[in-house]
Image (cartoon, rainbow, N blue to C red; front, side, top):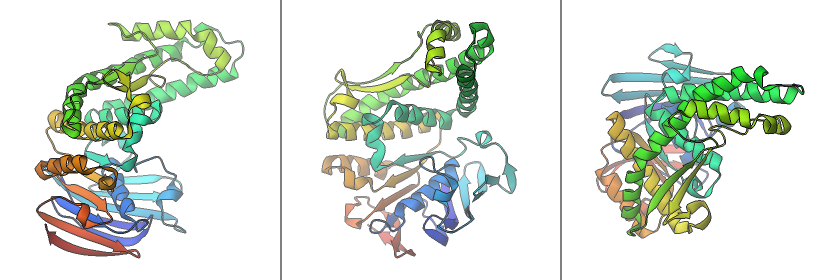
Length: 366
């Protein structure tokens, strides 16, 4: 899969710009606050139909604009696609090859993109919510039905919580219909998470040893709020009934995948607490490389890589590992940097130098 071109109008710092990309390696160069990350975010928005993080429409559009547009041309094994996204203050319109896509979930995972961001260390050191969101996003890219189930689960959870807040004389039988929905959908969400963890675990362990050069044991633990047994749905419903009185007092649902914990362990110690900065960076890098390998293995296609100033976060050994990996990687790469000296890639590069909101394109041989 290759992103051939991208046209932006009123997207963050870009009022009007068209980019023509190299099939392999694209380098975005510039000082800080010049719009390098904005370009990566636009690419991510186009391919994943959403930005890196949840943003309001006003945060995506250029200051003072009432709408923004993105247009991209993608070449894949299935053929040639054109994507158009129009975003205004009220809604988003997505068109694929001239046809409006009314449900993003229908095309979720069509284009696979993996990001390397300086904040990826938060996957190790940050909140459980961040790890749940990351895990779910990978599963959605591999299995689009997961996105549908997440939305259905959140809807049922919101309804159940609303009833817990509003109805003081609530009895268990009056909320049973929502318990059944939560158990049916939530058990599917949990099952997919555990299945994915079991698949990525050996890859992550191998990649961590390669990035660190250390023979440390890496584990991923999934701690659920319900008992994990052969009849997960029934176990879920039973736990909801047990916690019903507590949920009434707290006015929210305390059982389900929205409460589950995903943790990384290095040599038996919780990495979120005990990992050094170096160990956390190794683990985050190994996790991202494992994600790429999983997409390639399961889907049989290579994702597009977006790396945002990641070289400044890595020491020389990790940087060498990363560029050895990128040298062998067969897909398309976009990487931002403040200095070309940080780039250890050997081959043909298309450079985009950004200064004072002016983009200059130049092909480079390194």
